[in-house]
Image (tube, rainbow, N blue to C red; front, side, top):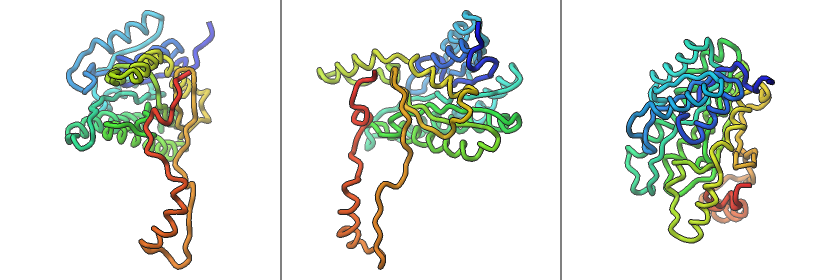
Length: 305
């Protein structure tokens, strides 16, 4: 049997008890990695604790001959994140990759969003990604290697209604990833983003109360979480050694490279600008390049292939 693409690597996958994280962890194990399956077993909204999801994934990896241990610490807490990474080092002697996948949802229209709705989502997703990446960074620097895979969302790239907290957290992960890539490339450390697509408990609340919405939900249910795992495993491998600071979309059997923010049109006025000059000159010149107020489903207007 040939060695897997991540043979011998030690990989942490957060939020690995269910959905996309579960399938990433299982494929990491299948491809030869020693996996730390991190999941606190909380509800979709972040409530409760349950060791069962992480334990089940560990059992599934071991049943196929892989190596794995469970971790129940929360990524939202700095000290807990340190313990997750230390568990990898204590058990397997090193850490090679972290897949920051943990997340919760508190979807609500913005003018009704509470501070707690905002705070809890930001803590798990954005603070969690920082805490885990920073905890691993010291080890990566010392061993002169490492990779981070940041599981973002198109809600943080294109946007979605009722997801100011979730979208802001995921957008923050994008620039966190880019800055890590810039800061740590000298130590052979890479950080890349994946905006996945799948029917999971995180998308299970999409309404199906009209024929069009019902058809969309039926199609989304065909997009299984495992379709995102190969790209995550590849990015954790040495085969991706030249891939750094990139943003990918994963949609069923499609992979897209995403654009990054760059100037697209400019205007100049030699005598400077006044507010009225902007209205008279700059606005008409720039308006043709304005972006429409689109959502995820407007950007990807076709079904995943």
